[in-house]
Image 1 (tube, rainbow, N blue to C red):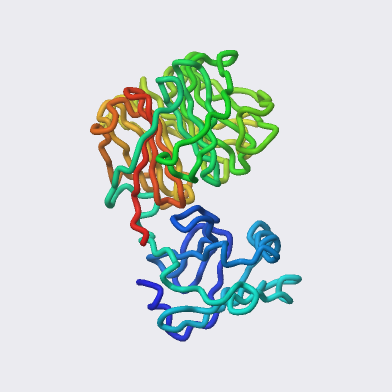
Image 2: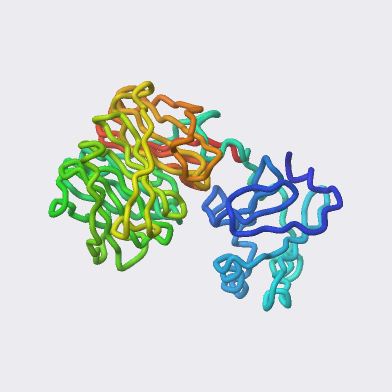
Length: 383
């Protein structure tokens, strides 16, 4: 499917602030960075996605459009296609947005050339089952990186280092791109809580930070005064002891809604799943759901990541130098997930420790303690 396949008489396509794709509709996916810079992202059909550069939106209208996106207002995209370009009107479906229409061919600087759109294979997003291409690497942390996280904009990179007991924050020169290098911002010292921090996870609003502690076999929670920052004032909220399940927790991840927590344990080679009473909080009550034995794949499992709306998990195997992919039909349920892909990273690092998928599901990153680096890959084809 490509852009031209939509010239089928369709006059109105709906998009919403969910991630999933429904055939015949367009759903707002995310504002993400791309080769063309900032873009509003859309998904159509069941195979591809495309996007509109923010540069097409005049500055006088950007605030209003951002409000529409942020509020989750149901909007309609009304296109008029030719073989080479398209004109689009963006109209709100509910008051007060239904009284406002902002057409591209009027106030938004003319037509959108189809060659400016991004076309990605949807089945490859957040998946390592297809072609995985190594892009670049960069030294991070203090020689022993064991956790990696990007903020939503792709402008900030966070790395956990268990050799120095710190979480380090970087400001990247190019969003989602390690090749563009970055600037050191500062560290958060974890030594008062645990000398061996592993993994890192931010809440959906990016104000809460979680990491696993080897030394005390616990998961730690902090609240930051500023979203997506560990260098501003951080308040310690509490911890959850996991030593009764595994005495070497190697990471932590939470489901998109913050109701499930996942902890890989190296001693038992199992991934433990918990239900949180309060979203993105381990202080309001934690219930053990069950665990999955990973030893048939790897006896030294490390970091874990949750992707694709909670239906895809990625797990690092230190013994086999691999990233394992698990997919479930039930969002957030690792207990029912099946291993359906693996990618070996031996040629880059023989001590992989944590993994992160970002840039709208187009890229994969992992940190390796052998070389003390973060590595970047392309996992989805976008043209």
